[in-house]
Every structure is written in structure tokens, then in C-alpha cells.
Image (cartoon, rainbow over all chains, first blue to last red; front, top):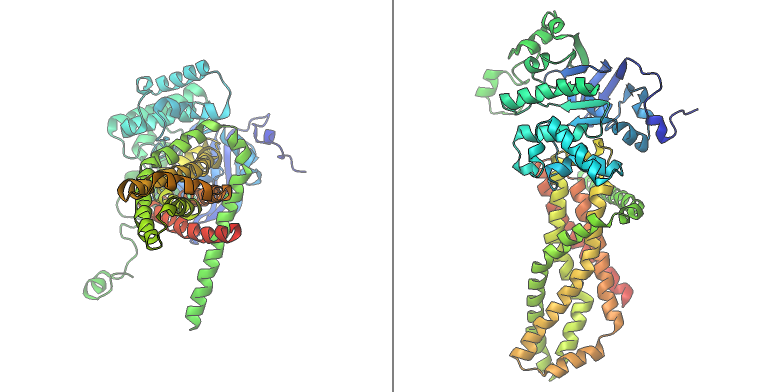
Length: 285
Length: 256
């Protein structure tokens, strides 16, 4: 019998597991045939800040899409808060997503709405709260990210860091259980990066939520992450605390954590032999 | 020869696939239509964006099309000594053909491209994805109001185009060439039938559905890159123009 037949099926289970998201033996290929995951196993602890790291193109964003039900695994299981994402219908996935917040790499603010309306957007769409209450909630969330004074600005008038913080206010406005960050530090100046970094940790602790952070910034995330996973070639190659990763014997982990240009992930993209290509007429392999 | 044949078959299959996807998209839009109508505000905003914002180009072009009709019509009718029929000829050609067709072509160029580019950029900047993550259906929240805005705006724009064009023709025929004003308007009133007006409005509505659907489909499904958005806007104009003319023939044949 299908025990996930109604919208209520996407609500939190009565007994909470210590893991909020579990990916078991996940296989996933993109349309072009390239394998992204080949037996990925990850367990994300409830209430922790978990970092997902890895070289470019290892499927970190794909992992987030799997967790949020934007795409589905070819094989294996993705379980979020006790629910097998692949078995949920669209309505149930939407119910699950209402318990998630996501910060996109570029903020993804709605450009035709001002800051206040951007943050109020999920409330207006999903609740019938009176305007006064919406105003209070939105201002509270904007205050939490330090941008109460920017409520009347439009996304085009915000700097990158401010946009990211507004998007963060929007992501927490529905009081989610899981907050997902896709490259939250990309393109930010050191001050904005520090602000976002501090916000991730403080929101996680103050709201009692689970944070999943996809990032390349090893040094920054190591300051706040409780647990980190490093992905490479479709699998988890290392996991643990920052100290554990630093002492990890794997060459790829060493290359990634220390930011080495060459190593198991080569500096050069596969190409023809250098001299042969220089002297010959062919540019493309 | 076999290669050419294979490519032809492949092109035909791709065309069929695209048509199928468009039909599926349209069916999804029509399925959520009733719930979309419950929120009139975004629809009104889109009628303003697609309709009111197209008024200048529609009225300007309407005026000049009317003036050209006045010139050409007067030149032709004077050969038969029937210049008093200028109003009738202008009105019938505008109501049945030129009004809806030219308005649809202008709509595709002005509002259609704007719709496609807006939706394409929303996809490229993750705004569509953000809505999905916020458990908001972008089809309902973004696509449907824009589609309905276009559908409602088109017959209104057609009407305005025709009225302005009639005054453009009157300006040339009556004010410039001296055709009798009474003849111009009274011949028009006696010759134009309700069916002519209905034909113009039906065509306007059908073109509105087609052009708006093509614009939102191309924009919503654009590749999330600068090139993808550019392609979507180009395709919107090209496909809308071709579909408008094909539909025009079919509707004319049906309503004659």
C-alpha cells in the first residue's frame, strides 16, 4: 500500500531520524550521457551545517537538485526527512519544498519586485496572513540579515552581497527546516563573505535548522561546517570534520583542501600531445 | 540521397516533437486557467504591459496603414469613378484582414519578444527555479498571467488599430483628396456588416492566443544563456508571423 498518497504524506515523520537527508547508492547521468554520480552515499545530519565540496563539475549542484526533487536519480534512493523523493507526486514535492529554503548562487531575486515584496513573496503565495503580520515577519527577517533599511530597493540597486542577504531573508521567511546554499560565497568581497558566513552559522543555531552548503571555499566553510563531504568522480572521496579532512591521506583531498593546481585533478584538460598540436594543423583533438 | 532523406525525416520528426511539446504546454496552461482567473491583478498588470505599452506602435502603424489605404484606395477607385466607396473599401479590408493581421505581426514584434525575453531571462537568472523551490508553480504565477494578458490585449489592440487606420484613410481621402465626408462615413456604415466586425475580432482573439502562446512557450523553454534568450525572441517573431498568416488563411476560408 502506498503510504505517501496524500499531501499530508509530505509532512515530517512523527519520530525524527538523526539524518534529515540520506542518499543511498545514487546513480545519475546527464542527458549527454556523462555520468555525474555512480554510487553516491551521503547522510546529512539534522541540525548541523554540512558542507558539500569538490572540484568543478563533480555534481554538487546536481546533488542539491536531487535533494529538492528538481531531478530524480536514475538508480538509488534519495530520502529527505523520511520521504523517498522519487515516490512523491508534484503536490507532495511542493509540500516538501515548503519546508526547505534555498539560496541560489546569484540570489535569484524576482527583478520586478522590491526587496520587501521579494521576501514577502512566499508568505503571500502560501499563507493568508494579514498584511500587518506579513509586514512584521518580513521586517524581522530583513533585520536578521541587516537589510531592514533596504526594504524599498529593487534587486538592480543591490550589491552582490546585499542581494545574497535578501535572498537569505527570503529563504528563511517560511521558517524552513532545511536551508540549502548553492555557492553562497561566489563573487563576494571579503566583508560580504564574512557576513554571509556568520549568517549561515547563526541562522542555523538560532532557528535550529539544518544547513547544506555547496561551496569551493574550503578555508571559509571550514570555520563553520560541522561536517564536510568532498565529491569526486561521482562518489564521496572523503568526509569528516575540517581537521579530519586536513589529515586525510587521499591525494585528491589533499589537492582540494590545499588548493594545488595539479594533482589527481589535472591542470590540463585532455589534449593532443603539445608539440604535435603546435607543429600540426589541428586545433581540436 | 539517403542522407538527405534521413535528414528530411529527422527534421520532420523534430518538428512533430516541437508541436507536441507546444500542445502539451498549451494543455497545461488551459488546465490551470480557472485558478489563474481567480487572481485578476497580475492579469490586469500584463494587459497593461502587453497592451497599453504597445499602443504607441499600434496607433502609429495604424495611422500610416490607413493613410496608405487612403492613397491606394483613392487612386484605384477614381479609375472607376467610385471614390465615394473609399470608406467602405478601407473599412472592409481593415476589419477583415489588415487590422487583425498587421496588429498580430506588430504584437509579435513588440509584446511577444518582450514576453519571451522576460521569461527567458527569468529562467537564465534562476528566478523560475527559485519559484519552484519555493513551491510556487511558475506556470500559474508567471506564465498564465502573461498569456492571458496577451489574449485579452490583442482584440483591444486590433480595435484601436482599425479605428486609427480609418481616421488615417479619412485624413487622406477626405481632407487631402476631397472625397465627400458624408459619403465616406455613410457608405461605410451601410456596407459594413456585423459579420465583418465579428471576423476581425475573432481573428484578433485567435491571433492573440497563438502569438501569446508562442511567446510564453519560447521564453519559458529558452536555454538559460544569452544566446538562448536571443534565439527565443527570434523564434517568437518568426513562428508568430508564420502561424498568424497560416491561421489567417484558415479563418478566412472558414468565415467567408
